Length: 400
Image 1: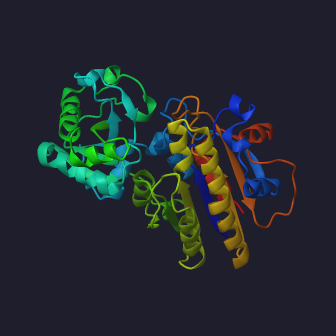
Image 2: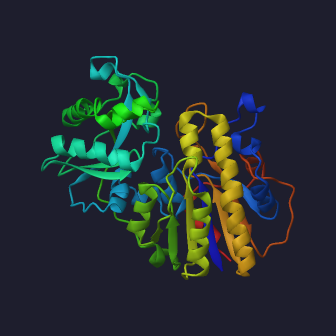
């Protein structure tokens, strides 16, 4: 038996008037997911425990079978694992986003945050910008590490875990009420703006009509993580297929195999087919029992507030990932169980994450029973199936 999780990050949403009261998932053309639902089980699951921040960190830990209240120590430390940062006890890892701030205001705190991802800046451009920051600001206390696209890492040696606001929560807002209260961190952000605002990379981006990565923004602070080995915990050899450092870092921390897919970048036009083929190779050639395919695009489109692009991302997931995985597994003759779900909602109306339950779809290739339902939030809620503890869902997948 092979086991697969296909996760559409932030795919769940709220009903939208522009879609006739449908969510993007319900409105999208998803014939493969609907066919799997008709032959499987749907329901709702709460992936983010009450009292915890609804992030991809807590939610994906939960989907992977790790109780966030036990294993979560902060978002950035998980990303640091993938970057290869060797954290010591007492070190604090902090996510350092390259963001776009408005430039007309003279006072830093009066600026607006225009884009949390600087138009999903390329890793190549971001690396040049980070090197400029490293040259000016890096010292024994503060060390910067290049990640992927706009997502980077700051290590504060023997630092403090302080409250910091995610930039995707405050798009369009004046930053003064949300900047770090810790003066050392705020000063670093201000200095980063001075270094980056007129950097040649950003001047060239503006000429092309792209948002510049003109400031760092710090958030997601946490301490050195300690995760139980996945194979020891579940007795399954697992592989992770993701473009983002957070998921890759979780894989490093849990001893799963990390598969790199060329052209997978976390954006709307990521290499969907490459992810599907990587999962099939892990399961059918490399001897893995379990594959976790993470697709970031629906979440990014939710943060952008783009209904049509979010629908497109969901349709790409259906046609270019799920369909390919199903066809490949069916052709192999292997029995398999597949779980499809978001980690959390990223509703268009708020452009950020919420902690509401999400719809899941569980398919077993051996099952021939037919149902009338399709896969979306509305029908999953009406199914009557509900799991309060999201970290128990993976164990349910592994039941035969």
